[in-house]
Every structure is written in C-alpha cells, then in structure tokens.
Image (cartoon, rainbow, N blue to C red; front, side, top):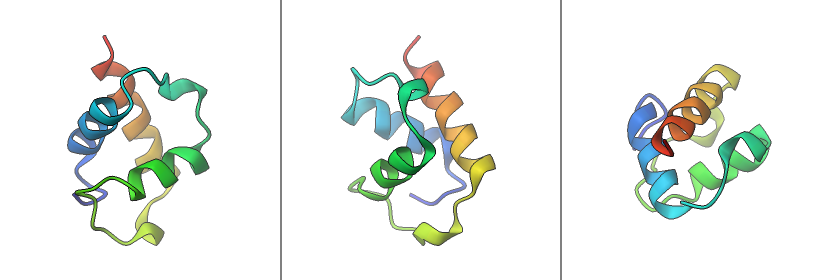
Length: 64
C-alpha cells in the first residue's frame, strides 16, 4: 500500500484494530500504526497532515 491509497489503509487499520476509535489517536501514533501494516510499503516521510486526516476519517467511516 502507498500513502495515496487512503481507503485501503483505512480498511487495513480497521481489520487490524477493530476496537480502536481512530479519533482517540494522535497523528504520530496513527502514522506509526500505518507504517507497521504488513502490506504498507511506502516511504514514511511522504505522509503529511492532510493524508493522515483523510485516513482517520476513512477509518472512522469503516467503523459505522
């Protein structure tokens, strides 16, 4: 997965952490969790606040 695959990242986070409310996480913690996903293979330095916010919202939507 790459940073631009927002929905895939959100789905993977939801699958791995179904009981975590993403709203409760800092961007730093969420960034770490994304980089630790098995299928994630992008440069950790290529993320930014806009990307992390989009992942957070998509992950939150997965929970509904």
